[in-house]
Image (cartoon, rainbow, N blue to C red):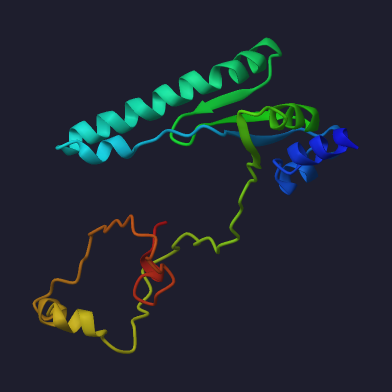
Length: 184
């Protein structure tokens, strides 16, 4: 009975995604998250941003190097694919259920989390073909009025031969004013 409680204890440290994706001998990527995480509270007392940044970086790196070494050595000895991370004291491992279980059974491991692939089925813009279409919005939006764009357009400046780039994830390329010209 005592063995079963121990088994349940370390199995509770393994995320259901990992259990599902390592069934029947399958391999999956999972994070072995160590129990010991860096204490960064000492950065609060430092006077400059540069000193705080250096303290945080060094503390995170030192903690990961000292706590991960036994697990990294075990993985290297067995030729198991892995990658160490220091911001969250964790190791990404590609392995089967047995590897996940043996790592979860360690007292220095907090949990074993999955690394699922996320896929978005967002519509992809098509290539703009032929001459630019003349679809224009039915009305001029308030922000356009506020910046006096209509007066600039009346002077003949309408953005011909200009490419505007954006790194904002909020750009709606399907907007009537953008779609015929979108290059994404």
